[in-house]
Image (cartoon, rainbow, N blue to C red; front, side, top):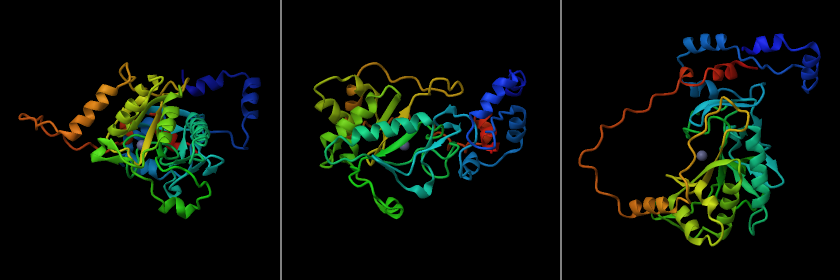
Length: 311
Ligand SMILES: [Zn+2]
């Protein structure tokens, strides 16, 4: 059933209540006019990153993640306040401190836990999503649905960084030997914060370099269940990457398959072994894959065209 039909059969009383719930004069555009969306999609040939990269604000729609982490968008995103009691958003010029309200809550909760660690007063939050999500002009294939966020490895000891300091300050790398091991910047606080980040039931996965995962596998003496969600990945030594599961009720949001059962420590050790002793090249390599095509509006869920069109 279409949204407009649903609206037409709302009783006047329910409609009045719905409008009263809006704080601003203009009611939010909840227009998922999919016929119009299809029209836009059929005539749009611009790379989707240009279209989403041009939007400075969230859509005035109910919050909803559409599609998958690397092929989607977000309606009604919320902006993480640039500074809070236990966090600062970094690189504000990028305007990527937007996400699903569940992500905003999660980051604030995590920041309070981090603030309890010695030397940390909270967290520095790197890229989240653009105001309407979608593909980005630079960096990241994922971060498209408002459920991904990068957390800096640099201890957030100062929370009064100016806007320009937040542009120029760099995070620190925690790796050595190409990511096979942690370096001297690694601290037990990193373990604690990653544990807190992974133990939250809203989390699907956390990406960090393989040496960090193996380090935590070796150091953990208590409950190991949280290690399952810590996934070894390329890069991710200046920040770790949190990915939340689709929020309850976000029916257009596609989860990834959950990580395999177990703590994943043997798998991480294998990554490390392959870094230290790269396997010989495949004598019969598969044909090189063609460069990935630029995402167009037609590659995203139809609702994303409506998200773009919305006020
Ligand atoms: Zn990331």
